[in-house]
Image (cartoon, rainbow, N blue to C red; front, side, top):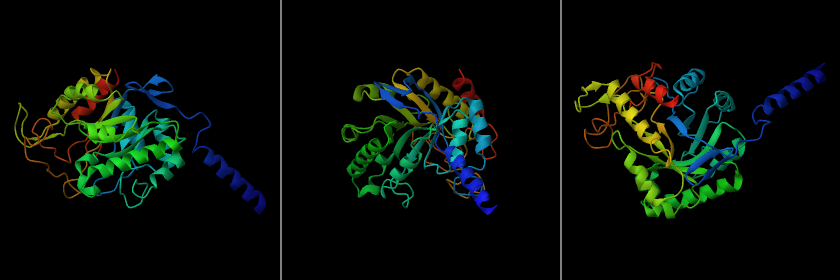
Length: 335
């Protein structure tokens, strides 16, 4: 009986492992001219940045993944972007079953956890490269703003970025490699990174990013997407007819215009990620409560007060109540 039970256990393990990597052929994700293609069909990103940290915590948790995916489906979201790899196969499986794709991003120095500095990011890629939930790989997040992380010289980051992109290409032939760059890359960034197939741009130009698409068209013939764009739901000052304090209408109006601008330039841009899915109570103070915090008014391109109040960026609040901007995504992403 013990032998039979061991055999049954062995078979059950084999069957469960077979669900990790799928029998069907892995999707082929490519780029052609300015387009992103999945199995040779144009793919337009209707996305949201996703880093679900619960109230009272500073660590990401997928305990609400089923509810979150259902809300994403309702909103017409087809892609999510995460800031660190998802190492739970059940989560990746659920994302795929929901008909959603995910961009997996790798940080430079994350203490050896699937990061670029240690080289362990390639272990993740080889572990999950056959999973159809993954759209493509993304390296770094606006590191061009932080040369101090690279011995004071951003060239050190560009060198690591290009080498890492090449290593990915040698290990995964089915997906492009991207990076998320802060604003429009200069000639040094572009020329230093021939192995980047598609560029993500974190762009905050008030409520109209249209100007960056024409600028991109003049400097590169590669595909581009907005890796971050959007607005928060807190007005630090009264401005443009929007009252001071929590102001969901200001956020909804700004996001509506930003999404329209992206859709109207779809011949150049391959979509966008609205920042972000959930309010982040961990970012500016006590993670048990929602704090006001950000830059001084009019110091940045964040609509409509110039102040990116860090804990108010979600299209959902921390309890997953829908903000007004949720309905903006739902209307525009489902059409």
